[in-house]
Image (cartoon, rainbow, N blue to C red; front, side):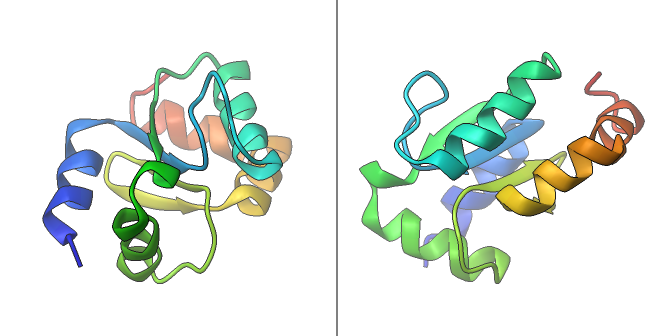
Length: 104
């Protein structure tokens, strides 16, 4: 597993979304949903396209111990996948975390 590459991406970007596709061109509905939530909140984030790197696609699941993509990290903390991010957004919890971590 390329743990260092994943740690570097998470460390170098306050908000990092491992996704299928890019923020401007998501390749799955779940990645699009999380990307749209972040855009709606005016969050600057790094989108990492796991479709470009099969090893990264496999390794990020092992790294987070989370079986699906997308995966959202905020200030090195794993937040969750699509369902969790959407639920947190709807309850106002995601915005609260982003404010606490001085992203918003």
